[in-house]
Amino acid sequence: MAKKKEPTVEEKLRALYDLQLIDSRIDKIRDIRGELPLEVRDLEDEIEGLNKRIEKLEVSLKELDDQISSKKNLIEEAKALMKKYTEQQKNVRNNREFDSLTKETEYQELEIQLAEKNIKEFKAQIELKNESVEAVKSTLSEKTDHLKHKKGELDNILKETEKEENMLLAKSEDYKKANIPMLPLTNGVESTKINIFVYSLLMIPVIIFPYLINFVGLIFLIPSLILTLYYNFLCYELYNFKKNKFNPKKAKSIFGYSILYLFLVFVLFLIDKISW
Image (cartoon, rainbow, N blue to C red; front, side, top):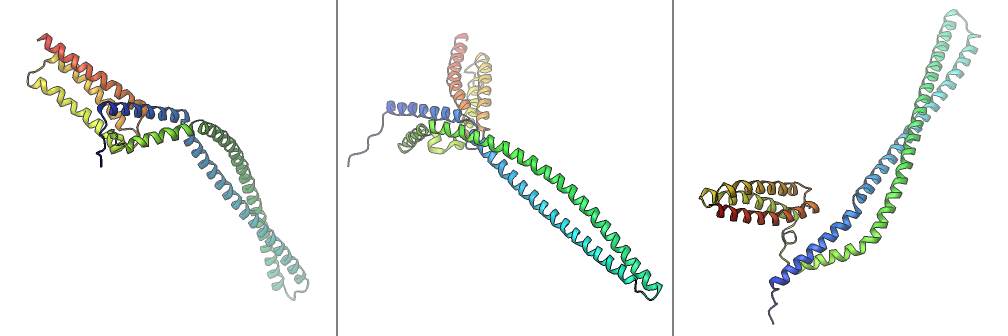
């Protein structure tokens, strides 16, 4: 079998350039989409929470209605007993029996008063809960309309960009299968961010060491060290972004700064050597 041809350096660079263009376009598409998917998900969660709150309020209202019915039944029973005791008082044989029936009647009157008081309290609670239900339903209606609007926006953007994004992702996947030597493809995003930050830190001893062996002077050391520390800061911001996620704008700014950084370090080296 013929040995598989190894891609040339030019082909690899062209592939890397193409991959960068693909990733840039994917980032642009996702920027257009923005936070809409998260907003839609948050609104859906809010609406679910509001529906559950309405359900709880309606269960509570049902319980209050049941308690009112129970108290009304108690009042009817107490009135029936009072009528019974009044009839029995007409046929008592002594004062003791009359007083006993009077006390029973008074007790039932107290029961009626307490039940009526409870009914008033329950009705007040029902009124408050009904107001809460109306307020929650109003909020729910607003959120539902807002969700419908956001879903419409998202659907329109998806229709416009989904086909292109899928095509670009497929191309990116082809580059992965082709073993193009890019660290995010071979090692993952989080590992790449760590590597970038660690390599930027390694530039500190690289800059300081020539000065320690008297190969360069302060003209090179001080500006180069300032440039390096700023480079470290940019790389740390990229590393400190969300786990397994790149900040595309920050990554591009680091790429641009790294080219400028290396150029300036070499210029400072030449200036330092000329000044000796």
